[in-house]
Image (cartoon, rainbow, N blue to C red; front, side, top):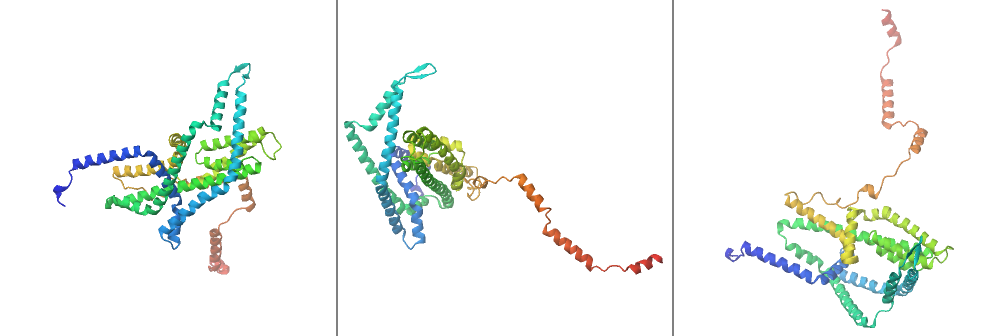
Length: 424
């Protein structure tokens, strides 16, 4: 290529800056589409291990594995809700009716003046606001029907787009990844591939751990509420499992909903008032959620990101306010990925090697938090030590036997000869 035909350095910088501004403007303009594509990529990432398993372990091409896993997941996505719809519908109706009854009781209580230690509080405005919210929830206005229909239609279209995008991501991700790597210079490609593998390791560990934790929590609380005889146990268990994705905030909302149902309905077999049933429910919930936090979560998330809890809580709250459940779910692995990428850039800027170690210990809980050491009782140890007596090592016993054998093999002096020497 003729050197005169190449772009000058200043022109290349100008084109690069214009291209970057255009990308940022496009992301801002198409942010809703990008959000749904992120959801599609997230779903594809969750079921991609199954595709890898069938394509590598079974005699199947990747295209056949993608079609098998994709359509099987689609059948489960449609078939399981269709099968459980009657059960969920009945129990959801019970929970919704209980919440509406609780709202009505609160409205009636707030409509009357509240007297506390001779002080009178008038909360009638709160009661009116609560009644208006309940009426808007139960009886939407007729003129809002067209808006609801339009919103539903747009939601269905986005759902179709997500389904198609999931299939595209599953089928074309290897070629897309190789294409992205091809833009990197050959001398830096190995570093970029290593950086990609480290980020991928973080996402795999965190997302899988969260899903396993969500399923376990949902099953445990469903069984617990069934044993206690709480109405709507299945719905309340599913809510507890889903809300556990948002630490601290989610469990609080789940126990508030469950306690509200217990206050209104009580138990089907516990012969106590609804107030005491709700109290027992809160105690059981606190016990189980602490067992999850202190025992189950360290084991499941031992290979996941290990970051400061206060930082994680603040990040989750901000992401929940800005992006809802999706932001709360993705903010932690995104932060961990940014830390890894920032560490790589920092080491490159300082002229150090691009990576420190093999990355196997980064963002991993230390062993003492996964398997904490057990405390030993001193009295028990002293008692066992006294019962066993002094412990003689094998080496000491062997040395004593060897020394005794040596003494026996050495020639002993004759006592008569010794006596003659003394007389002389």
